[in-house]
Amino acid sequence: MFTRDEKILVAVSGGKDSLALWDILNQLGYQADGLYIQLGILKNRYSEISGEISQNFANQRGLKLHTVQFKDQYGEDIVEVSKRSNRGKGRPCAVCGLAKRHIMNKIATKYEYSTLVTGHNLDDEAATLLGNTLDWQADMLQRQAPVLAAASGLAKKAKPFCRTYERETTAYMIMNNIDYIYEECPFSTKSKSLRYKNALNALEEQMPGTKLRFYSNFLKARNQGMFPKTSDQHQDYYEQKCSVCDQPTTAPDTCAFCRLMNLHK
Ligand code: Q46
Ligand code: ZN
Image: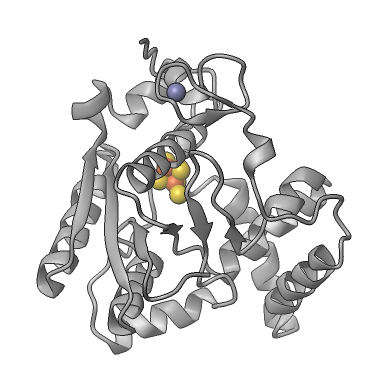
């Protein structure tokens, strides 16, 4: 995925997975800085608490944490943006996902990190895989890789915990007495992904190892060319550059994020 010579950027949410990942990379001698995006989710003081926890984690270890204050930078918090947008049918996740992807790539490329790593664990990946399979989303299945190579304007992305059960990252945090935000984001409760996780948990309970088999055998099939394209490059998916932010986009002129935020040159 990456070597100790590379500069790594860890996307940090204040939750157990991303903080366990940052802690382990740090313990193993990788050059890993963090990125926290303050989205402004007020419910249950989610953003406030997760931001504090992330900053405390960095301070205690002398690690560098980039923080992006979304509202300060773009004039609205993520919930306000989602209320005036048609994306996501009134729920902020579609807008939030788009904004996070944009900002993560922006910071990773701006500060020349070789790799952007996220704390997606096996439970997350198996749930995504189940969703993509139920809808037979061949292009999504093709791109559901543990590593996506860098391409022009896009940082390399990696998911080091893709074969690690969520219960293992939880155990790591508890055994090492590391503080993290226990609450999930208040908007995650009705997500499809949570329903897929519940379904897989039911199978896992009856047949331990189901999630790992499902995901690992998918990767084998993918590597054997079961899905049309076998390259890990995501270059051709984004063919042109946005005229406002210069990030790669599939749209002909302005990228989805700049259009969402009404950003102009
Ligand atoms: S942070 Fe954002 Fe998630 Fe909250 S609003 Fe939805 S996408 S659930 S990972
Ligand atoms: Zn743009």
